[in-house]
Length: 137
Image (cartoon, one colour):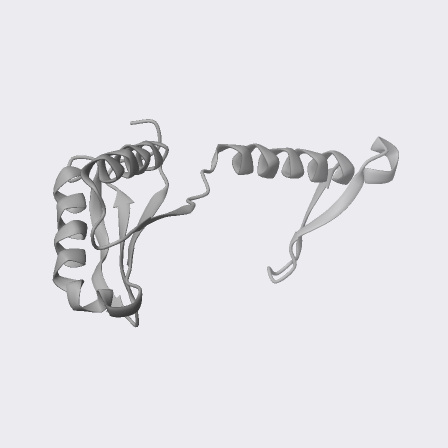
């Protein structure tokens, strides 16, 4: 029958008793499947991790500037990694770094949630903020 219709005989369920087969155009089926996969790939959003670097004595203007960048990243649906870099003897100001990161969390609490809390790793204190809503919200 498949040969007469100029189509393919495709085995759908080989484990069934008797095996189930279907008469269809296999090339067209593969094309439609690829088309659906491509369409689904277009609609998905890849989350990117953006990093903001601070110093323990970051000035208010610089802080506001970087905070605005963080707001933009979160609105786009990206995660933000805020890092306070300590150099030399700056490590004695680790409490200032913690305050700076907590201030950032408070300022961005309507746009984000803390994914990874502030943690000191060597001479860097970092935390990750994730957007609380999807992209473009």
